[in-house]
Image (cartoon, rainbow, N blue to C red):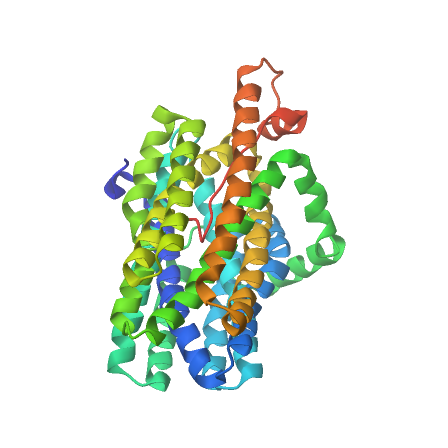
Length: 429
């Protein structure tokens, strides 16, 4: 494990910036389902409003990835963080249309910020340390997701909703100032960057240019998209139903927050550990450990639905995901050209957000017909299919690595048809 003190200054700043932004996101995500249910009263409306977040991320992810690669990481991050601050003000208006608009803007701008941090962090890794650094960054990110709900619960116990939202705005403004001061690069938000972005979007017809470039990845892209679809469904499902379900059964805000924190807290230790073990165990063993943990975690809650088994389900699944995602990061560094990092992160986010669109709607529909926790059965099936595809991907990657090949760019090895594997995830660094 690489201690934080041994990381370079730029890497430390990027880890801190990404974690702080995610901390505020986690606070909001614990508050949003409870607040929406109270204001809207209809669970289908709640699920529809929340799904706007994923819909926006889905629409913006590929174009944003292109802007990040071709205009600049710093420009994209500045645009995203400023938009994020502005979007929060729509939360003050407790009507469906405005809450839907807030979630849409929230999803769009956090997607831009997250992809910019991911791409910039990957820029500052080497092939030798990428697994460890990305694992450590994932650990800090998941600490933000773990402690965010607890902070939200404490704030909600102390303050009324309008003051709570005001505190979030102040936090975001302070984080924005820090981030814009220390984010690496020279170019900030400016008219030149905006005009260049507009030109790129017109030339690529929003999506066609990115799709053509990503086709170079071939079959590995399909396996990655399946995994991130399952991952997105899982996370959006639990962050939608868990606060509502635990609150309805009398768990209280703090207990509910601690249960939800179990979905992220294991990453704090497991992600850096998984990163350190990658070179020793190899991708197949890492995936096997992750698969057993993920599917076991899902099964725990199927046998008995209680607060304890829900927390165990979250924690065990989180451990498994930590072991699966680190080798994906290593694949990107070894097999993908840096010029398409942003677009690849964008494509992964698209798959993740497709799951994110479906999950809140599923929770809303299931809540009207049956026990909303039935979404766990769906996530189990999705993960089973996704990890099967990753096993094939890892096998082909190893075969391609073992076979002699001509000197070429890493991405061309993927094109030969027998390679592949990669990446981050849930706000993965």
